[in-house]
Length: 162
Image 1: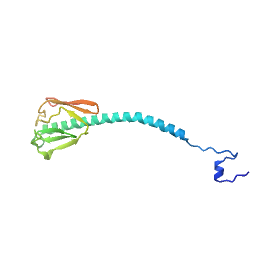
Image 2: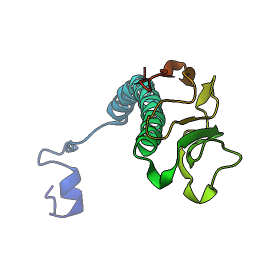
Image 3: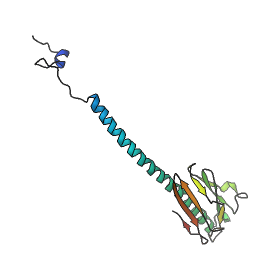
Image 4: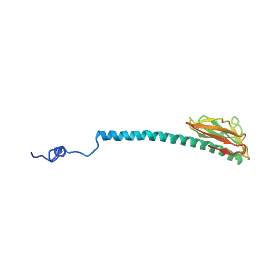
């Protein structure tokens, strides 16, 4: 029997047997997907821990930067005033003056913080004009997804971070 060239000749080899095509079988695809799923599970847990650590570190750095900015503005006598800090849900605000209630809100500078960041022990304070010492020495606790650290402001103005 003579076979004509064409579609049928590609499916059946010269000796009449079905030609084997190169490629992956369904079982091989399922095996590869299973391995990738297991790897993804382990990596996603590690990635979430790294992200949590990063959010905590960035939040602490943002708070410390705002503290230092208020201190530098006070030492430099910017706008002829002391500068203070106020914390509310999701943001920290640098303000001109010695009291949040009587401040000049035109000079407020706010920095956003993660909504799930928990800060305990915070109270509004200011740095003295020209000296840069805080109105009172204090420390407060910063917590984000089981990461905890203490930021403190000493009586001479030293700022310590976790």
